[in-house]
Amino acid sequence: MKRDTERKKFYEAKLHELRSRMHVHLSKELKAKLKTKSRALLANKGDNVKIMRGSKRGKTAKIGRISYAKGKIYLEGMSHKNAKGTEILMPFQPSNLLLVELNMSESRKKQFGLPSEQKGEVKV
Image (cartoon, rainbow, N blue to C red; front, side):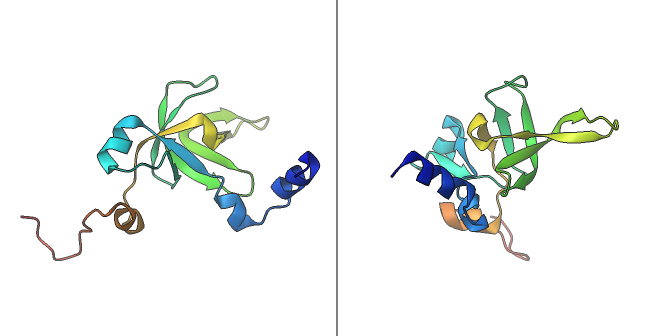
């Protein structure tokens, strides 16, 4: 397709289509631990990521919130002050991050075939 058509599709995408663009690359260790061949995974609140590009390169932080509409991920502890002096979380693009540790929810355990712990169940 033409470039302008692709650009139009990018900017006029619906919210559920924008969500699919929020995938973050998996680290080699995490990929081996999960025994998956997928290269990237949808980011969730509570996941730990490593910043790969920009002035904060090399630092690790937890995902505070995700904005699908803006296509940005906001990290806890990474903030700057605005003109009023209030602290604001810094936005990062998902392509500039690397997943280091996952917050294992029930849906993710099911996705990777891990055993889910239910209430009242005792580990042996």
